[in-house]
Length: 260
Length: 217
Ligand SMILES: Nc1ncnc2c1ncn2[C@@H]1O[C@H](COP(=O)(O)OP(=O)(O)OP(=O)(O)O)[C@@H](O)[C@H]1O
Ligand SMILES: [Mg+2]
Image (cartoon, rainbow over all chains, first blue to last red; front, side, top):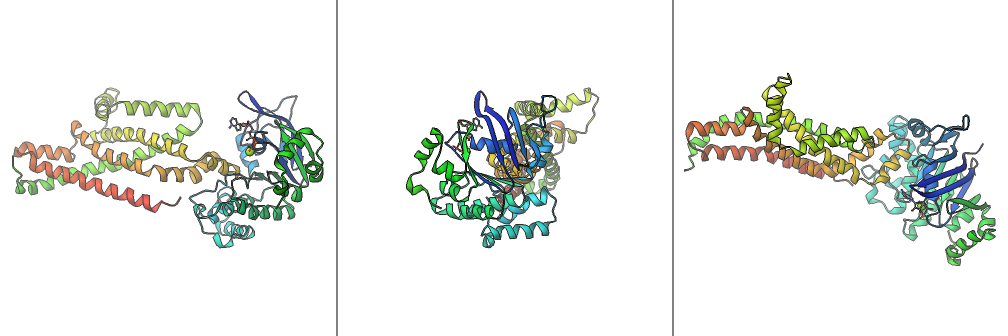
């Protein structure tokens, strides 16, 4: 069974359709990179996946839980109650472009917060786990620093550790390196690469074509609220079938932009 | 009229008794006003139309009516509704309801000034709205609104002077009483002014201290 299963997902903001029937699956342990032009609906897709944005119709199942709309019964679906969505979100990690660390808590506090408050883990246990996670993302020496005293790359690594602390079934990444100075991009991508190698199921929206080529099991190209093309990185990035994919890659794949 | 040192000193014990009443009224009303403001502010951002409507109605009403009128209205109006309250209770009600209306709007604005990404991040970690509000958004918002809330507390303290119209022996009333006996306004009133100042200064100090202590972020 897929960790993520999306069928015919439709979502509009007001009268503007943003997602126009998206189908997508992510298998357990799979790393899927989503690429596409600005405004194609990539962020919206992730927001629908963890129920932060309501959507009009479609089936979304993450880690066995229905998101947004429940199972079909007699041709109709019922909205999933907010409580059930809140429970489901425990298993869906998400990292945002803007870090969104809690500024009034230390790095350690940020990582411990949800395990203590949401999962009711004993503080000592949560702290031990948080320390181990911060070590894993290379921030063992910054446990007690506040976000304001961390670089962008460090903040983003804390944000990844914070999401991992909930032991999610899947991690969603939304252009997590786009707000970083170029020299800080590598340290964040390295953490994500390690996570992928350890078998984490990941859905990664990214403009880093090098990362997509090297790390992804599958690359998905979105445009105009639809999945236009998907396949292995070699197929989609190296030999795209769809003219729209080719046009997009032509714009972003200047030779020097493949690095990482 | 000359300043009479002896009269000034003589009036101090009477004034001090009035000051205690003023301080009691102020402290109780500030605390109740903060609680009302917290509930009201949360209602305003709850996203529930009914709660928001009730809170907005309350704020509009209490901010639109002068405190003196609210106090007299409650003082003369409640008994005709069969509700007999002590003058002090009426004073506390009027002061804290008015203060609560201002604090409601301050806290609403404070919450709305916190980046939406904070709520999104908290919710995405499995926190419910209430938990995310309590642990993530409110602590940041309250830090930010501490100065205006401190100002409201100081305003309330000074507004307690209005309670003398409903016959409460507060600091101002003690001053006017002495003035009547002694036919000298200046000397006791110097004491009144000094005592109000003596009560606002600790508040100013407390707010400044909390502000510097909470400066993180
Ligand atoms: N809260 C919102 N209200 C109204 N319109 C929105 C909102 N969020 C996004 N949109 C619109 O929806 C469309 C898709 O936005 P989305 O952020 O999902 O695109 P994206 O693929 O993530 O783009 P980018 O690469 O720039 O991040 C855009 O046209 C955007 O203007
Ligand atoms: Mg986006």
